[in-house]
Length: 502
Image 1: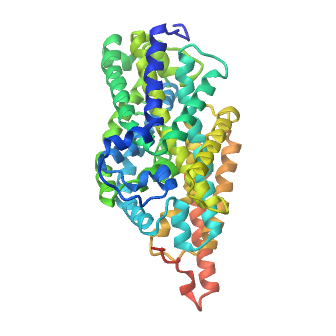
Image 2 (image 1 turned 90 degrees about the vertical axis):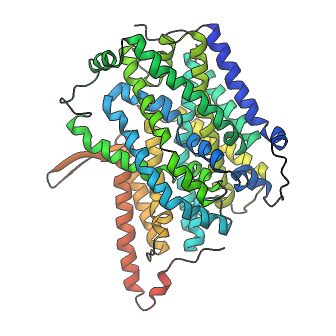
Image 3 (image 1 turned 180 degrees about the vertical axis):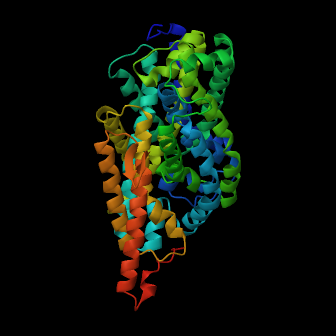
């Protein structure tokens, strides 16, 4: 089959109308939102907190769409099917990781929300500084969040660029359109923009995915014929196995490391901290698994593309080319808009979460100025644009996994710091430094691959780089903590974390 299917004017027109309408709706939310909310409110929130955390007032319904919206992104619609298209069953590692993460949310995130609410904290770095009283540790957590989110935003820009390229535009124009649309959407709307348009994004994605999983198999002769055809294009595995023997450990460790990293990112934590109560978070942890069902259906698109005869040298084009091959042009344009909006909504939350880190934790003179937050968010998007241009990842999904390697190094300070352990700040700092250097060094050596080969005492397999780096981090932290405890054995109370400021 032709490697590139050209769309018609109908596809372009529908895409422009749906995508631009969503941007306008989100960008002008500050103008029309008061008309929908006539309740009398006390203006107890600063302008910066209103822009960056939505005033901490989102209920269960809005939080469900916001957290789901910034958790299920272009990573879901573009990168996962692309990996399934290239590797087969290995690409389905995203399903168990999303299942693992929900009990983690239920158990841990309400506690973090309570600490943040009581202390007036807006970021993970705020919480860590209040816990340990260490400016150095605060900066390390903030820098980790900022750097980790850049390749994740880059993945969203790639998602928007991909569908614009599928519409027939070439060169730097698709990337420029993606960048400008994201910048305008975030600058004007703040966190209220993605929160109140996430519903539109989800409805569009649901329509596109349900149409695909119903219509495409019918077009291809049913699911049996689809799976049989796809099997002929993928690496063979033993009968009854989803992945090859050598992929079992990478599959499991990538799922586990992704689950640990998922809600350490600034954008996912921002969605949590914007909730109005701890019970709101618990309710969402119960119902968010519904998104995993959709994720599994989306992953099948990679197999459908093989069955449909899609051949492309760019794995990111798998889903757009499939839609162009099967759907009428106008509906393909609608699906492209759903993908673009599905990248726009979470990317804006990511930029806002990173801007919160810059304004609250990195700049020497903190400010709640909304203008400062907007400028910081714009700078973050420029950094993400640089990642798209200069990071040459084989698969788009590798950008998200690279961010996971970085953000996992905050796990000991943020999550283990909630436990009744006497973890001194110097030990956590040392663990962060050594874990970060080890993780990024292995990624560089492996060419941005998310796994690293490990051979030890007869064991030989590729293991998630993020999990390896986190293991090194925790080991260094615990060992150095013991050394410091012994050195200051006469005053063990000095090793206890600082109390949370309320």
